[in-house]
Structure formats: structure tokens, C-alpha cells
Length: 201
Picture 1 (cartoon, rainbow, N blue to C red):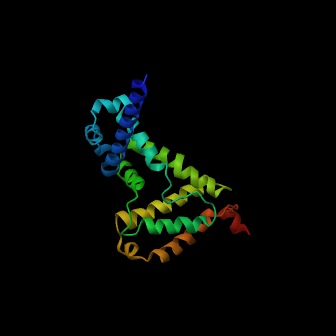
Picture 2: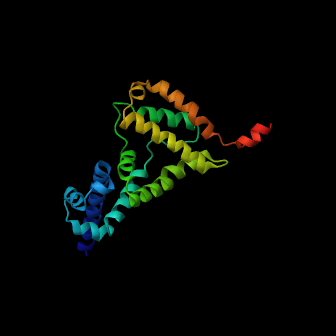
Picture 3: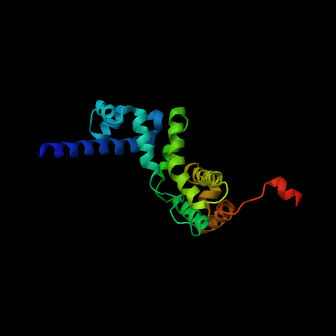
């Protein structure tokens, strides 16, 4: 009777090892550059085991994206002072000496592949996009959430990946203040009148 639970534990451990290895490989090399054999080698299994547990490289990538985008990185779970919280976290997490933001690297390096881009899009919308939209509430929450994420991703790209001189050298607190001012209109839950309506006033 004890063999079956042990077998289940071994299967779970093998699956977890493959998924953990896949997250690393996809983050470092992107979807197109990460090979099934390299993932299997990192996990200490054969390539056949990946098909057994995940069906295909695409199936494995989908679960790796889900694993990467599930935990909060820049957008937390508190509605209070949301713009300032996002801004300060973003400034801190993109500082030159900060630990890298793996979900963003996975997104950047995999986006050129159409199949991978579609999976990444689903991951963003299901996790950080949905979380931010829920926190925002009010009119056009989904659109405002995506605009907020665009600001987050753009800041991360220029400051932490491309390392533009001005943003790289910017003081974290000052940068957070500027980002807060940009995010606050997005975070307001009240309706914003269309441009044509405001012009008519």
C-alpha cells in the first residue's frame, strides 16, 4: 500500500523539477531559444518526460508563464495608496542593484514568437491585469489597468534592460514621485469625461 503514495510523490517532484527548470530556461532564452532537451537536462530527466507531464513544449511554456505571473511583483493586493505603492515598488525593483524581474524578462524574450506572445498575453490578463483592474474598479477598469501596466513595463524596459543613462541614474524616491503623478489619473475610480465632452463645457 505504501508504494502508490511514494509513486505519486515522485511524480509530483518530477513535474515540479521540470516546471522549475522550464521557468529558468524560458526566462533566460525565451520561448524560441529554450530547447526541450536543455530543460530536461536542467531538470535531470529525459525529454520524453516533458511530453508525458506537459504534452508539448507549448503546454510547458503555458504553465511556466502561469507560474511566473501568478505572484505579485510590482502590483500588490492593497487598494489604498495604489498609485504610490506601484510607483515606489517599480522604482525599487528597477534600480541598478535590484534583483531582476523574471516575469518581465520571460515576456520580453518570448514576445517575438506569435504562439508564445499569445500565451504571455493570456498570462498577463489572467494575473496582473485582472488583479490591477479589480483594485482600480470603476469605469473602464480593464483599459486603465492595461495603461498602467504599459507604464510599468516601459519604465522597467528603459531603466532595467536598456539602462538609459537618465533613468538609471535617477533617484528612486524622485522617480517614484514622478511615477505616482502619472499613475494617479489611471487609479482614480471616478468617470472621466471624453475629450469631446470636456471641450463642449
